[in-house]
Length: 385
Image (cartoon, rainbow, N blue to C red; front, side, top):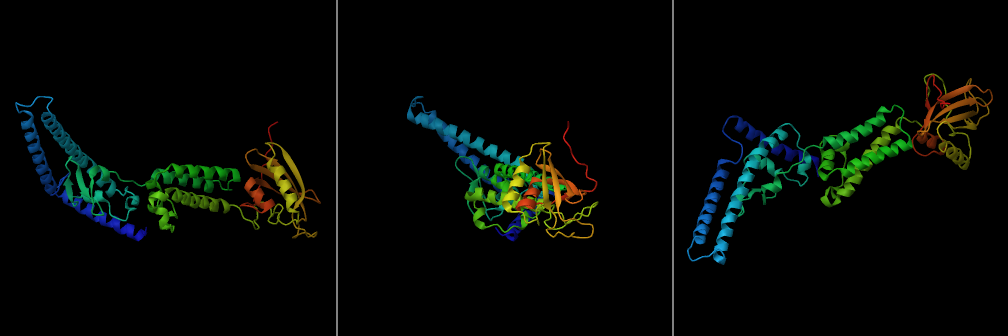
């Protein structure tokens, strides 16, 4: 639905509620039913009282026995009147109680725009601000006119949705973990991220999903152009998948921002041209074999890869540079690896740091986000002995 239209609906309700609160503060309006609605209630109670009296009179006829159908019908009508009046009293008390909470939620901005998904204003805003038309059905149900002009029982209108802060905060926390990692997450870690947000969204209700899409609880989601078809109640599964993909892509974008496929200078060592496997001309099947060997290492195990990085040009790539680099990689057992690169000619260390499986996949196979994370004064991890 067009967000400008939703905002107009919200403003219309805000005006009604604000006007009622202003009148209430002056003492000219009270909580609960309006004087006109109370008059209609009194008229209903009087009709019910008359029906009860008539039924009681019939039941007391001296010619009727307790098993006579006429007597049973009269007693049934009397019990029906009692139920109707109890039902009416219960709903009236509920309105008086719920009105204060609704008005407080509305004033404090806690009510979600998900309540406007049907394209009309909130019936409750009319009910609680005293502008809704009211009827009472034969069973004592308070009936209020909804945004479409139909009268519905108060019990069907009483529920409303608050902004889904819990769902939004859960998703935002998962995204922030990527940003706070400082170096990006591995493929395995990003898989856990995707599983977590998928579970959160799938467990959420439709109103929660509409809230995070319309209430500006997550940066960027409010600007999405969502197909109208997805907003239909019967397509909630497709809408959830849409949100999962959107949040997942946002997480991937943040994670990718840590990894550059181009050159990057380390703070301590000028190793910007040593990108593992990116410019060596090594056949893909060989690089795939290397990758498989590395990712199958257990914690503490290591592997050496000879002449796997650097320029194919036999001449130094820059003053003091090298042509090939031999790498030693040690698995940390958590999807990351410590690497040390040495000049294949001089044996001098030219690069060191850590690299994730996701980075390895890009550097060696050209798949997915990644790049070496060069570090200054890297402390090489070694297994406990």
